[in-house]
Length: 337
Image (cartoon, rainbow, N blue to C red; front, side):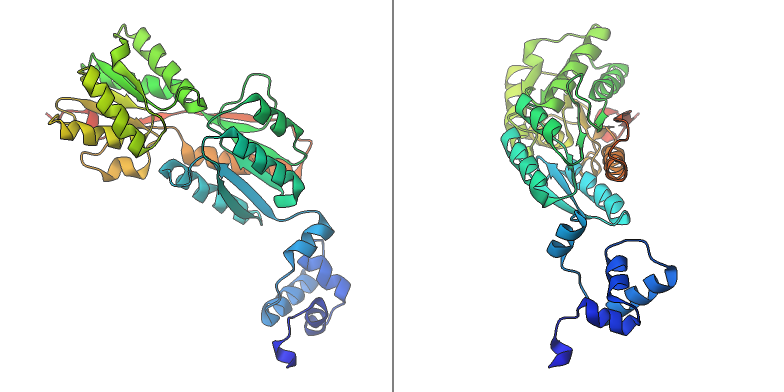
């Protein structure tokens, strides 16, 4: 049955009344007159023609795919990033393929290797841990990569990062203005990029205001997850009695609020609470959580734009962008008068 056969370039050319070469040029994104382009696209749509992506990538040297690698696709901050990156790259004619690599740099290295075998045209990577082997793989990549996160000094790669140190400073300043003195910190693993930066910000901000930084006011969760936060918050309250707690992300903050409630402590009456990342979850819980907005959507947008720029101009100068934080004040840190 002829009508059941797969549409081909020949059928599209016959329907459009143009040559096969013209059809090929239009469907491969090469220059063609507006009139021919319109005819070919209309004919392809009528026939339900779908280009063979594998054959096309071999012919034109691209897959029209962008890879995104994050630690945890379930984390609200990564979901927000993924949605924004998808919007930008789709507008530029690419598809987004997302991978969840966990905390292991080895998994990210393996993904980078597959990228160089033609898996995608470029990658946006948000690593929790930046190791020497990962840096070496990034530098050796023949395809463009943009990093969301901090890179060691001297690593010349396109990147977009948050200013976690300044963000922590905003949180501590706000709590100090509320009269809080015993400000504790629930961090994630300190051998990660965000864990190290947020610890540095906490120490700097507390020292600047002459506030006590006793060891019993600091705990490190095993991960940046709700489950790990429950364990860390229990440990913190077993060893100290803070009047405020800053958490390294909103999932840790929600977990901490749950543990405080279990122990009969009110938020913000007994303990003020601040998270980081300013994700939707901070506003959905009761009381709503004050959170440091580290510009996740802005970082995602800038990273996607940098990658599109690099794909269009491989020789463009390296650009490293820093997104300034801001504090979103909600119920968890201010006692109503």
